[in-house]
Amino acid sequence: MDFKATIQITETITLDPNEITYDFIRASGPGGQKVNKTSSAVQLRFDVGASPSLPDEVRQRLIHLAGRRLTTNQILVIEAKRFRSQEDNRRDAAERLIQLIRKAVQAPVRRRKTKPSKASVERRLNQKRQRSQIKRQRRVRSETDDA
Image (cartoon, rainbow, N blue to C red; front, side, top):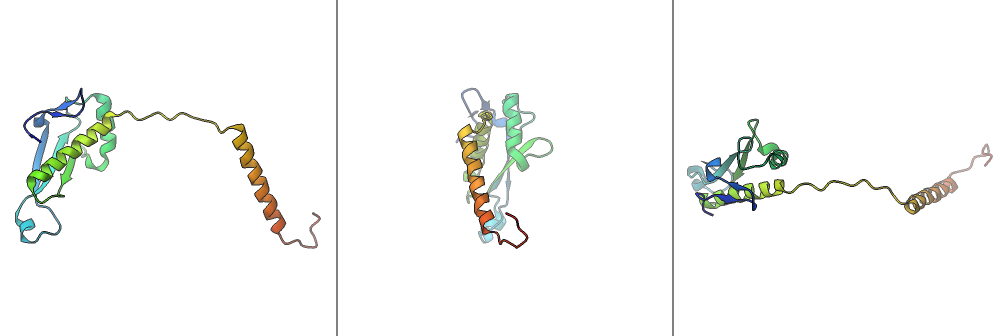
């Protein structure tokens, strides 16, 4: 992936590489001395609120999808530390950003309200009556019961 060229998200949405910043940090976890002295983890930052590349409806869905990865200033932060090399982590962070934006592009399918059929309602009520009858037959009858 070329980090200098525009990033194609969909046919209509492209990101300017200047909208994305990369910070290199030290990764936590195993790795011995190397992990303590190299900054191989990547923090990708993308300003969702100020991006001219995103249509408003996509921006709103992206803000909703980002969740805790979004700062109060509407900056999306993606941290990648899966790989040992800085370049692989940078590529991983960029791919995750692209996938998140592509997911935000897809409009959610509206739920259609449906009613249960008369037959299914009748079946449910019959099952309830049968279960009630079984439980009624299991009861211990006392001498005061008239039934």
